[in-house]
View 1: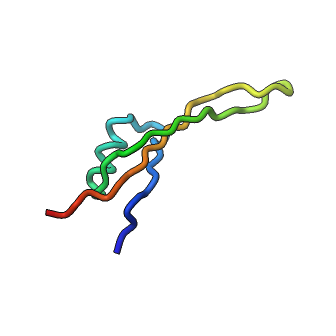
View 2 (view 1 turned 90 degrees about the vertical axis):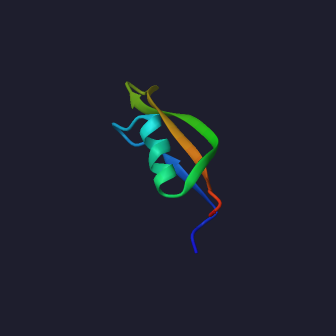
Length: 63
């Protein structure tokens, strides 16, 4: 039996649309979205380098 909810992260080089399509192929639909910045330290200061985007996937009902 598979999990009812799984978090899917948008991978490097992957668009949001491609991530959503991957979720659907695996039998999940988006039920939430979380974004958080990813920082890198440069000259002793935190600098944002990209945004991490994750979708909460909920298992689609089998028909």
